[in-house]
Length: 144
Image (cartoon, rainbow, N blue to C red):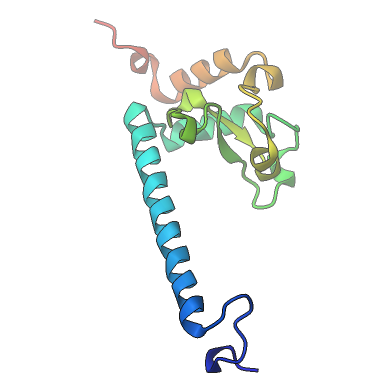
């Protein structure tokens, strides 16, 4: 049976009903994408992170902060960026709001909060010393 010859439309009575639903779905997806874009722009206006900052954070932990799986065991070999305060909850995109998580933990977690301290208690000192090593001491706040 050919769907486009009017013989089968599933729950739809006609081809026009089917096409109307497709149009509504496209409009909904477009509206959702626009809202997501606005939320991301708002988050980035509050703060962003650099590729280097993310790289340092990944190097410090070396594994998912939630389940502890090493990056080498992850599909693709890299963690996802988990926003501690989610973008939809008006969190920022700054490095202070990001932690490395595997895709599985990031998609299944329920606002567990900041797990970086639990995963590695000395992470802040290590992060700051690595920033200083890579960029020098003048990047920390501008000495006179």
